[in-house]
Each structure stands twice: as C-alpha cells, then as structure tokens.
Length: 138
Image (cartoon, rainbow, N blue to C red; front, side):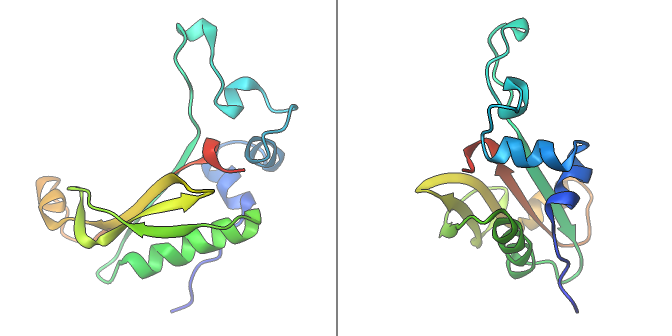
C-alpha cells in the first residue's frame, strides 16, 4: 500500500488557513499575527493560544510505523529534523508510543491507542494518532 504524502498545502487545508499563514507561523515571521504565532491575547484574559496539528489513523492495521511515515513527510517538507523517544502514556499501548523531539524539546506525541481507551469509546478498529505543537517548531 502506497503511503500518503503530506504537504504544507494539506496542513493549511486541514487547519483552515492559507499556505502562507502556515509558513509564516512555522518560521515565526513578524508578518504572522501574534494570535497565529501563539502569542498572548490580552483580550482573552491573558490566556495563550497554541497552534497544534493532530490526526488519527483508523485501520485494522493502523500502527506506529504508518503514522511515523506521515510525521516524517511533515518534517521533511518543513525542512526540519526530529527524533522519537520512547515514552509511557496511559492513552497508548506500552512500547508503541513516542515523544516527538525537535531541537531537544518534546513537540508532540504519537502512538497506538490502547485497546481499553478504544473500548471505552466503543471503537472497534485499531487507531494510531499524532499531535504536534506547531509553536515549538523552528
């Protein structure tokens, strides 16, 4: 089975923003608004808006290898490097979970969702998912 290619255009479409907005945000451009870059918004009582991207893969053979190939393409097209560091998280299957590390900072997590979590939600198909905090990417 051919692995899907993820592009910045795909990310922009999913996020509901323009291609250039994604690039400005990722490059921490001065042209990106503070809200887009995750800055403080005083109109929102000092809360901080963070930009995340996430996806879930649901398939009878969904696994860490599949989602890692998509994360690899994501980082490749952004011209960034990352590594995976094994971690434990109750939402995921032990040994099938990793922190996504960029510039020595954990910027996200990926893993195969634990069967107990799937059962609690009435989901019968195996799932793997990823979440990345875009504000930490540079």
